[in-house]
Image (cartoon, rainbow, N blue to C red; front, side, top):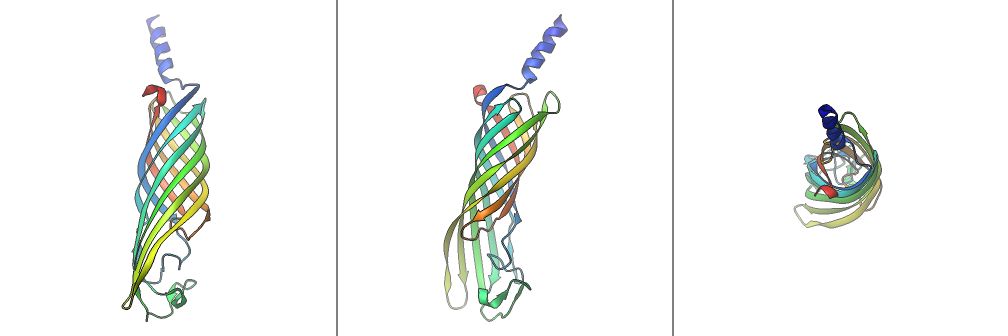
Amino acid sequence: MRSSIVALILLSLTSPAVAEVYTTGSIGASMITGLPPDGTWHQDGLPGEINTASLAYKVGVGYQFSRWYVEANYLKMGTFNTDAVWVPDADYDPIHHAALTRCRDAHAVMHSTLHAGELVVGYQYPLSDLISARIHAGVWGGKHHITARVSDDHATWGGPFNGMQLGGTAGVGLCAGPSWQVCGEVSHYHTVSETRFAVAKDVTMPTFTIKVPIGGL
């Protein structure tokens, strides 16, 4: 009798709710896995570097019904920096990745920050009483803000460039916990359409996520 009561208590603690609203918070890294073509914001044939990793985070709300869930999240996908030597577009061959002439070298410093929102639909499958696997897919859209400063022996020029990005996202993860959950996830963001020459066309984000049911706050 006593063992039956314990079993019922454990079952009530570990069984997923039929439907619940929850909040999420994630922190991790964003890594550029797809740059624009050579000659757009970077010239591979010239000295310089672009950092392709940054701190990232996201916060959002979700609704889980049975094993399915829907989430809406705000993402700060990071800031990516470039410090390089550039030449004018007319003096660079992006096909052969080489400068045609080095008579007009300039020093370029650029910062690109990406903010976005996403809407995803996912499925969470229990692997045990406490461990579950997650998979999701959806759409995302964001705004990139680019500041660039280019200078040579004669002048300095540049300025801010703002643009939009739209695309698709998909990801997988593992979660632990019966109600409050801790998850490790990896999501990929692919740009389908853009304006004003985005720097981060494809971004992969591994994150550490905490999921809290609103009723459990």
